[in-house]
Image 1 (cartoon, rainbow, N blue to C red):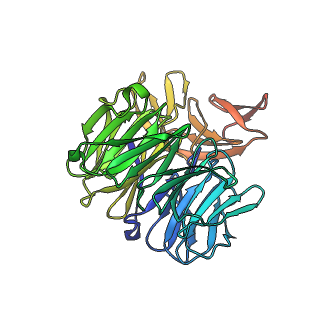
Image 2: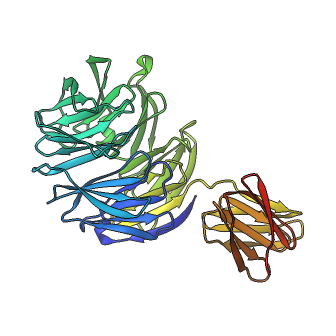
Image 3: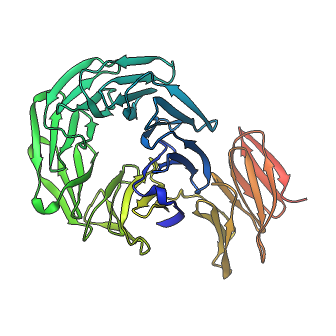
Length: 440
């Protein structure tokens, strides 16, 4: 659990942040200064969107190719394409202020809602726009993995629509403007007034369940579904609770911990890591989902005297970003690919995203840390050199009193593996081996 980078801007206090889906190569951060900034995995700014007003909502599409943004004082939807690093604008055609947007979990559909309840469903692939005229004043929404869209309305009702905007079901319940919806499997859930959790099954909408919690927990700050029907809930007074929605144990507290002394501000779950995190006060606590009583890690940020704010994991579980009330972003490495090679008694292995360590404990040599240019997909080590590479390119470094980069080489295909001896490198790609000298 190591820090990769830290960024700080005063305008990021209370920021909205989200990693791109699937691979997590980019992080989008929206502050109070009318900018959305895009950073790569190493903290380098890639691009920025200059908006006419404060960002109201942003979301990445399911493949992580496009981030969509809406802002105050604008009827445009701003799109940044990660593949070609370009920004484009899409005219929504809606006159009233847009209030939320969200991409479908299964296809290229973007749903955009307005403060007056109008809805636009945009197909990114075909450029088709489906306007749905207001019959409710919708203030939030969410997609299910079955491509159903749930909308929360000002009249305190929940409407379930299909991807064409046609209403399938409607449930009347006490929503307020701040109550976000979640659609998980066949369940719709909403935290009513931050006090109770309201659940209903789409197959049995007439039998909703409302769960209340102990007053000492405080308000519901954040909650996440995971597994086959479990809900993790973070409360304002620092409590961290897990409940089940299985019929025999519905509403039962399966786990409870007072994770943070004064306050809890966010929770996050990584299914790929099988870990859960909570942040509050000035610390982050990581639990193992298999055994929640087991604390995997505790990270204290002494410099964050005003406390932490939001938290977000990449889908692959490699990076966790935490924002603070002071406007600082801390990015931590929570999972590292197991990557390495050996030559005799010498070994080389990945120790950070851009660092390879070469060691020879048998010979009593001190470990050498090699700063590399790219996040490698392969490593090779020989008696005098170490090589790293990705795709069709490799970088070679001479090992000695000081590490020296001696060359980089491009191959005619994606390199699957590589071996080094004293003088030569052998690269395997597309069923062929290319042999060449390491240095001339």
